[in-house]
Length: 111
Image (tube, rainbow, N blue to C red):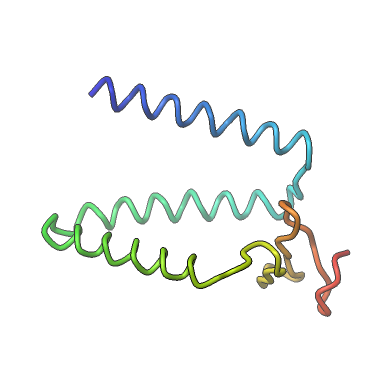
């Protein structure tokens, strides 16, 4: 159990340092990041709750299938990150571009 806890502590520490460096160097749009973080937290809690109800014999094949689908999707994109990814969010749009989320108008131009 201590090995798992030590591994998680190292993982959390590394993620926090990386996130802090990203915020200092690139910056984030807090109006976009805060609702996204809240949604991620709620989704992870819901996912953990649902996972507790799935029997282990059924859970392992589901995870394997999800990994295969995610891997196929990743391999099918020859130039990830080069094309702008658009997603509707609140009144405006958000575009993932050059490592940061930026607001875009309806035509897709970054504001």
